[in-house]
Length: 495
Image (cartoon, rainbow, N blue to C red; front, side):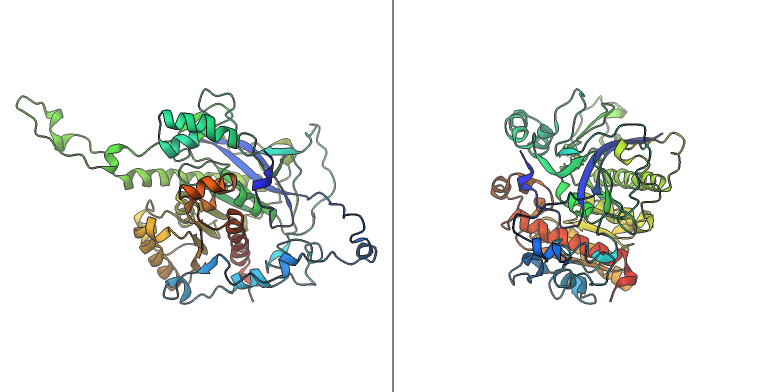
């Protein structure tokens, strides 16, 4: 199946992807890397644009990029009485939709034909053109030719179910239904899906360097099921690393060395409190109810997973930092790259622009990671599930500029999370930390993932995707993500 379902990235670069196994003495993690690659030159249609090119004029900006958004656009702000509107109007949202790149900017001309050129005020900071060192570095190893990349992760010959069945198993729990749906339904749907990415493509070097971003998947997700968001960010010059968490929150994690981590469902006793039963005479001490080990509560279970996820985010940041310095890996550490990226990251990644993004459980992971590690300078949380946050994080201000994008059902699904979000926003504002929450009309929880793109009618009919066309909803999300991150990572350029 070609990539007909995936929207065109809004940035000026093409995108490539690769999967890698990174490890240290106490952990190993399979990651998917999305990185910018030079866009292939497109030949103009016969009879069109010949005169303009001969005269040396830049190509005209597409009509869609210059027209204002319709009044009934799916993007909406939080209610007027919410904390997100009291002090911060966030003019960057309006600028992202209206202002073109400055004519005298270093990459303004190169980006004139990009859909994002007129919508991102900071796109001229160095995300246009190929840039970088054009000299080829000697490499004795032959580099394979770029080819279209697959969406569904490999299982590397491990003795396990595939990812398609794992998605079904997460949605319907283990049993005959999930096996049938996964094998006969999800597998044919997902098997040949290709995203708008290439495998083994060369790295593009944006002026100003690559900006690293760590993406954290949600409950039941994987390193691939947020490809649309990751691809769009990479098209703007981000070096996106999406780890597949090993806490059991992923639907499945299969590593190149055939290590398998299956999804961990919440124990039954964590959800329903067990009732004590009277024990007849003759019992032993081990049967006394209050002396038996107590099951974890759902919060304890999820918070334990969150702590591991955050440690993996910090591990990924450590690996990126080591690669950016071009130094040898720490003793016992390994973070190999494919041949097309070997030696390319040294001096090319700006760790001062490290950020993170995540959906649902991944949103909470990113919020807590920013508190635990000051290297993260910005955070975007998509319909964040804030329930697992540690108490000190939930009761304190945010640690980095943060954008929350929420679905229509956020208040209904996460009533307690909504209260936590409002208090987080208010305390952050009081401390001078920039934070805001916005909603996207006509969306539901899964609209931030790839699934509504693959099966729009099915996801809408079962209520996990909203009434807004999935491509339109994701286009709003993509533009908000890129504009906010530009705004947060380049405070010196704010007007």
